Image (cartoon, rainbow, N blue to C red; front, side, top):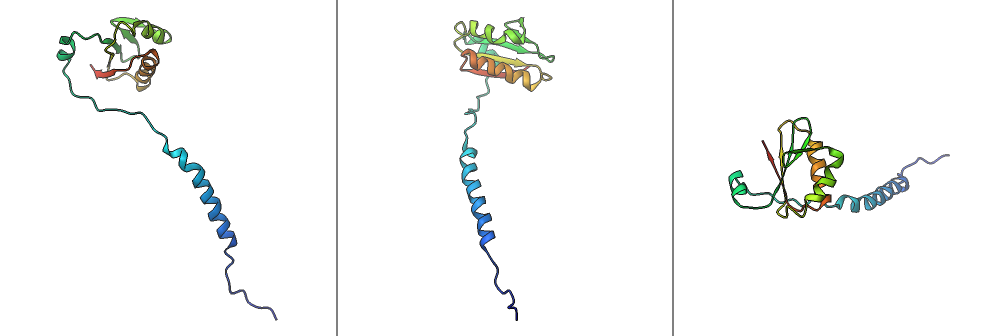
Length: 127
């Protein structure tokens, strides 16, 4: 006569848990990557910046994603080259003035080019 099966075999369940544990051990260090270190800026009026006699480069991003460096239009392919040539003339950093309708990608591209050009202090305002 055949005996009935009274016990649960937990070997497959243990195998699944061990595989999940290994996956979590591999993925956990990847989740601990650092992002950008950002500091919250203080509120400063535009008059205080202009009266400070500081050397700040003014770059404008218009609603149609065109760049104007000190009032002169610069095409996006020449942006990094132009910023590199102006880095030493403006040691206090850069002020990015954006139109409310300019795209996020255009502003981020400008910030990346500024960082690659050597600007360490970048401020953003909306006009």
